[in-house]
Amino acid sequence: MSSESPPTLESEECEKLLDSLLNDDHTAKKGRKAVRNHCMAMLMLDAGLRVGELVSLKLSDLYFSRVPVRTIIIKPHMTKNKVEHAIPVSHRLSQALSSYGKTWNLLDPDRGVFFAFANEASNRALTTRQVERIICAAGWKAFGRPVHPHMLRHTVASRWMRVANEAIVQQLLGHKYLASTQIYCHPNSDDLRQAIDSASQPSKPVSDSDSQQKEQSPPDEPQRPSPVPASQLKSPQVSRW
Image (cartoon, rainbow, N blue to C red):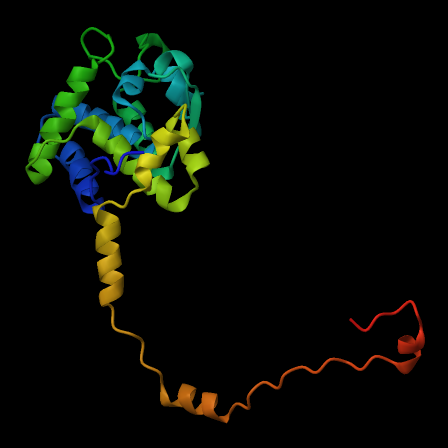
């Protein structure tokens, strides 16, 4: 297992990145792209998708009966290691998917859209390189440094590791081997900051009433063992030990 944790974003940086993707000064056409780009980032940041899995998604993977699915199934042919896995959709990801579907009118059967994220002119799926450029540019704009899409996957994986065991995180990420998941056991900058903030909090003072109540409360008397009846002691079937 590696001694270093993969690079991740802090919670504040995640929010700045999402705001940069969605809340930009733009024309109506760019506004549609902003909703799309925000939704793509949410799929990597909340569902932990690899960028290759993202561009392989079809509309039928994300929507059923014109509403967002509750669980995204990443099929073997879409993954790097050919491992199928399922990721439950969070509430805010479901909202992003709903907004994207309505803004782009994706759910109109007459449009003939096949891939979930495609070029508007050709209906061909976006390439991994195009998604990388979108996320990288958003990082520069949000906090002055580039962000690779895989960093979003690292970020959510580290977050999951704090609230679930390794086996669950392994399934969510679609890892074939547990060792691949264990790299997220190392603390990141959010963990270190939380430790410092917790340690620097002043101790809660003990009130006078609590102190007096503790002094007045009699100490607990040790429980004495109940005596064994003499009749039992005389019986050869009962032992005292």
